[in-house]
Length: 311
Image 1 (tube, rainbow, N blue to C red):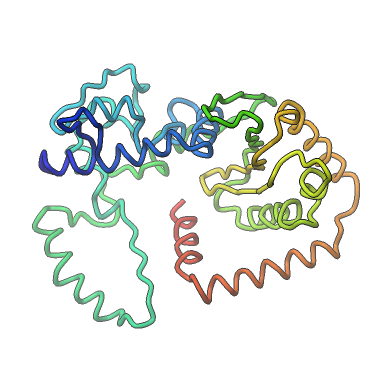
Image 2: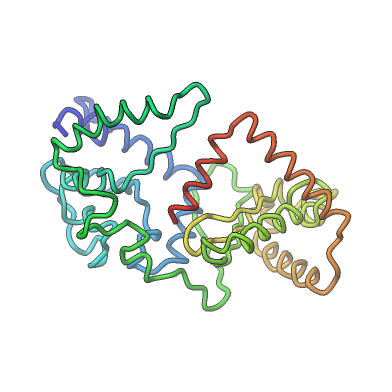
């Protein structure tokens, strides 16, 4: 990486005192986005210091401002010690990070397209890309002896998220509209390889929130004075998975009580039978949505499957 590329791709200040750079601009947008602010607060609440999922891996603005090409100005106390995934951020230059992270064994390539000839593609790769990798000394196999897979084999894999008891965290967010807020309820879910339970939870989430007729939306959205504008259910594919119920544009009067009200509804549902007629409709709609995805955007489905497999 040259100084010119660093200025363009990461960070610079122009003659007018204006900050720029592709990475800096992207992270500037994220730090001002309500969903991203909530997501970072969630990560910091769930994960311990030695788990890299706790951190914003794109870089926080104060740290990006102090990052240089040849050396980092960041001091050791910015991050805990022994963070294999993020130690570079506290003490290594950008070039060293690229040499460590941007290597073939840390890369999974997904190629999609009916017009592609697999044999020709692989032959082209072997004649071009593989030769360049060999020349650079990067043809070290799928898993070199000294290689530690980030997140999967590093410290992060030994420090699972922990919720010892219910807790509420208030996340400040600057906005001109103070009449609404956002609520996120989180649980630690099953391991990433527990496909059956993870799939069942996704179906359950759709049953609870997926349509105007779903239970939680009927209770809190489709009413004369809605508590919020929308509800979504997400299963984040980490290991273990993280389950989230998200409530958008929550009215100020509901911000302090909505989470407890939702828990009471969920506890009540545990005492009554599942509405199998509604569940049958949920399954039917999910199958239709899957077929539509495979027809119009197969890459989205395949890439998600590959990502889950890597975890």
